[in-house]
Image 1 (spheres, rainbow, N blue to C red):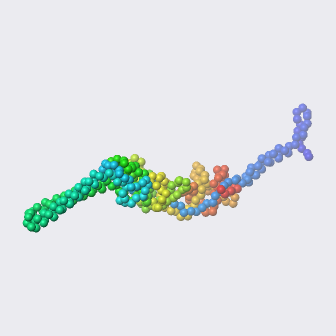
Image 2 (cartoon, one colour):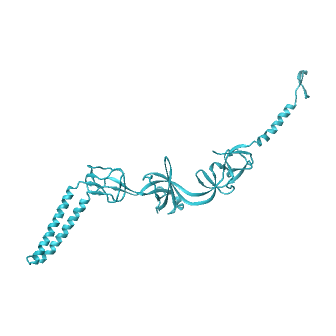
Image 3 (cartoon, rainbow, N blue to C red):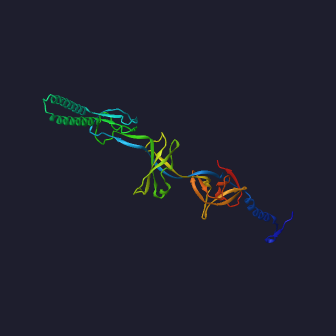
Length: 350
């Protein structure tokens, strides 16, 4: 093999082969070409077409159809509780008996007084028939009977106050008082909840007022252990806004949902409209740039840059308005290292 000789200082002659630098330079030139042909590993997902619900989301609280505090109308002592915690009761069912000895005595006296006056009128009428008493005395006796009947009715109402009944059918809460307790008007004996059906109360900011309408479908979701979603319908929109928060209060009715309980916090989704055949991709496919959003779709093993406009978002997916079709593959991982036209080796996400 022949090379080029260089003469070094001191008269010493040494042979150095100059073709090694030439090979090194050639490798440097070829390296980018090899690298350019190397496929970039990425993760891709298919573009899908779906029916998408445009919704508003907020938190709400479950309510019974109505609630009532069961209390007494007069101060007394509870003689007997006829129910227990959490029982389901019928409208008018007896819940508590109060001490009633005085009321019972008053009612008996009123009935006895009425009986006496009725018999006195009967005797008077017999005497009038035989002209032993003036007929003019009859109206006065009849007036006494009317007053006695009123007295009986007052005594009956007073006695009725010693019996505490359910104002409507529903489910009782935990008893706050028990036999032997002295209670006064306004004191809570127990709270009764009319359920089912149930309602959901929620609020939206003023800017969302145009999105809501009575009759809209609702989806109510709660989570304990696993998620459960129930259907409902928007029934009432408060005509005035809250002066402090500027929000709108709404009430929705819920279909059968045995596991829901008043007081639960739930997610409420109001369905504004259902859009058909919407192009959707994972949100992770979006790449933000100063001039807007882009997506890389894979065409013939290469990354193709596509500028996109987005729409509704749902469950980790986003609507793409134009530029993509069902079945296209888009890069969802590794796209930040790509450039338009770069070769890619795509794997589907697990």
